[in-house]
Length: 178
Image 1 (cartoon, one colour):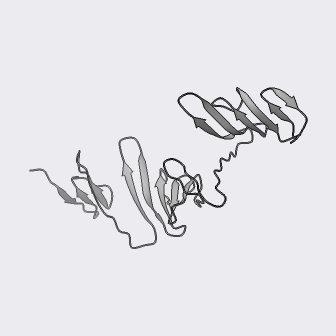
Image 2: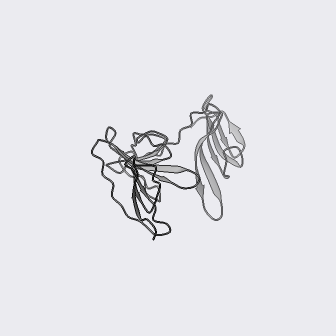
Image 3: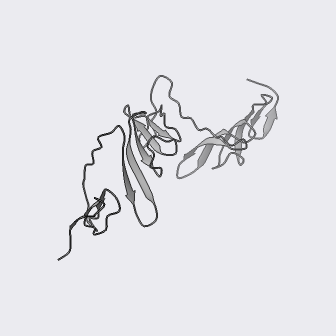
């Protein structure tokens, strides 16, 4: 019959695999699988690999975050990190905001922060319905823009120029400030 359990000379264990390359390789074929992995040190990581790439999920004890991403080092800013309070960080390993699938932000000073590190980049939000798309944010000229489009340089409705305070309402530029 088929060998279901293997221990190699190197000490690697295979369940459903005759040639395990890791301390534990589980190949359940097309069935679902449930497992618990326990690490006796401060950090723990589980790697999941398919035929094209690998993803990792684990815990970073120093930052006290659950980390998910393509980097096997837990707690790095390129992974999605969730702290014990439920704050989610994307692009940061020190999350300070809580999100759910509707991106509900609640608190004394609720904040959604979109930040670009590219000097000619945009930082903005899109609001989309079946009928229209609105974008609100800062464009590459450091102007605050509200646009009735998916980008900040088309169908402009309000522009506040940070360099001089001028206000443009639907194409009517004024030097007056509120």
